[in-house]
Length: 178
Picture 1 (cartoon, helix red, strand yellow):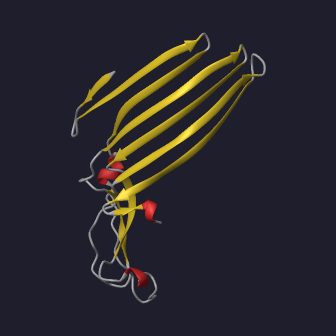
Picture 2: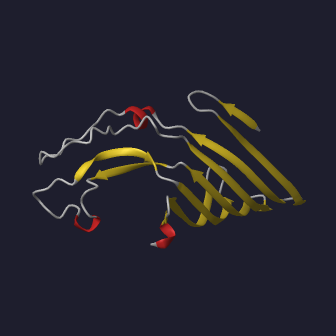
Picture 3: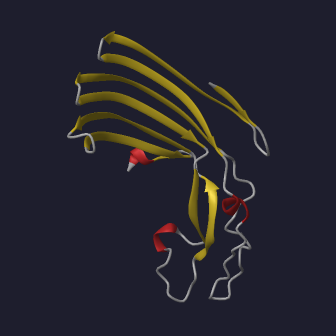
């Protein structure tokens, strides 16, 4: 499937799935998709500003940020599904998702104050407001194992376990370095 989105931003998004039945109740599959999330109107145009209580110069930054770029996501998944009997099935998959231009909510601090002393002087207001910004790239990957069992016609038990890992990259900083 291919979709063309247009407006203030335009993007091509797609989804592709492939599966192969290896026996009557079992199949392997692969899936690739891309996504596009534009900023909300609030993230773009929220008018809130902050005036420091200590009389220092305000930044005049609004919470909304009309310069936000949309988020773009690429996802890939491979897996296996099997029907064990008429009431029980299970699945296993591996997945990876990359999101670029992540939109995040950030606090803005006085850039003239060293990081190690921010907020330590009660006579000084180091806070300068908050704003939506594009922070960088996120990577998430993992494995998932699930089982489904029909207990009765009205009751189904589903259990899923997921092992998830990932990191965020903002400029030259990666959360892997923590």
